[in-house]
Image 1 (cartoon, rainbow, N blue to C red):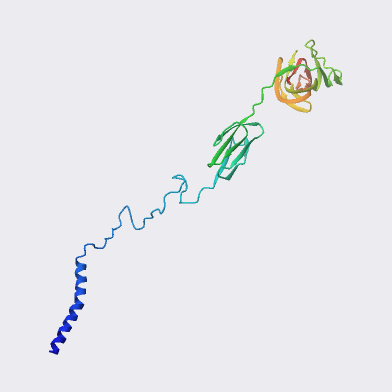
Image 2 (cartoon, rainbow, N blue to C red; image 1 turned 180 degrees about the vertical axis):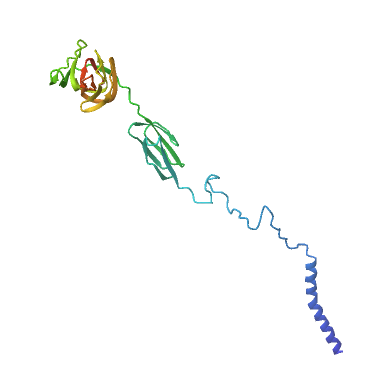
Length: 286
């Protein structure tokens, strides 16, 4: 009898231990909430995709947002048109937002400031701009065109001739006996070179001469012209009528007309035949 009771107790213990294990197994086989399946990576989303952790910053799509530091300064660049016509100060620089910057344009010699262009405007040479963005500013200049001078043909007040007189075999200095007032024509003959110095009475801005020959031309002679000690014409051929030559302009009071003779005639004599009937000087009227 004891043996039968021991067997029954052993069977009861086995059943007590087996029932919980069997219950867990059955529950796992009939659970209506299976674990979620992993979605495989697709073409539009992968495990490596970096998603934004925050929306764009308060400055909107054109501002830096949270992707970089906020802008704290803007760049200024300037340019001169045409090149070399002037300068701009300051030329360039970085400035904090909303800084007021004064810009000045200075013209080079021969130019005037005209106007501002680019990210600035105006026609005065100094302006102030606000650095609320990057600024590219252009300063325009124009070349100064000098006025056309007023001129007149002036008759000298007096003249002095000098040279070596062939026939008198002496050096001559004195009145040329030519017409200063259009009333007289006198020929004179000098050896090698003759000069006539005309006095304008005061210093003038001279830009030309007119010499009228009242008789025959010197035999192949050439002409040099000086204003003071400065030669303004050299080796010029003057004809038998009115001869106008331009130069300069040059400041001066005295105009020297110099003829240089070529050898001529059968004796190869060197001579000047000076028969100036009228002499005028082109001067600017101040």
